[in-house]
Length: 103
Image (cartoon, rainbow, N blue to C red):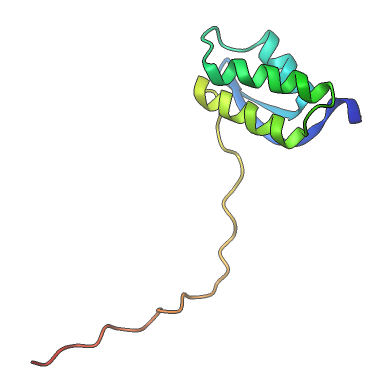
């Protein structure tokens, strides 16, 4: 399992459906076999970083960031992380009004 270098899920579009990438290995396979034809500079750099990661030269977190940036560049990334739940607390200025000038 350590060979695959797992990371937090990254969602990308493939033929109109969502696909979850959960490791540097999956990201490398996706980039080498299923990546869109247009290649930008971030995609080329991400491929190199992913291969370096699988060789043990960098962390899975670095590989994930490179993959996300390349996916954004290619227009296939979409955010699936929900926003944090509201805390229910009002801000420090809640209910306060500005003083009214009377002159």
